[in-house]
Length: 189
Image (tube, rainbow, N blue to C red):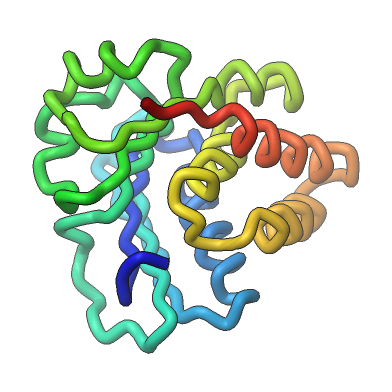
């Protein structure tokens, strides 16, 4: 982990799994004996409305409960949300990860962000493996590749357990496979 407290902001629309993504990444970190926080922030609470989810991961106790203002990573699950405003407060060494099959130049035009940028076709992978557009686990795989914030195995185990509690075994395994495909499919410059 590059700094004492690593902060992540997920941007999505309600119903796309950003809250679950933030929860899964911190629970994987907890399994690795790290300190964690995760919380969502909703605008109008309806499916499809823009929302954010936050995650903090640290090797030491976390002493703040404030909203994340200068994230180390911004994860954009819904690329229609891209704008200069979205990336204006990213840490100077931060990582921008976008669920898109568009080239990085397209992201730079939308945001003006010149820093380290990753893409993954989370939507395409999730439709192929899950049969629906729910790219949150795929994007998490790309996040692990981009940041090494947790071990891929820790996150894979947590994803399987999380989805086994909610769904059948086949869907839990499909989500674990989507996570691994996201890891393998993450691209950057």
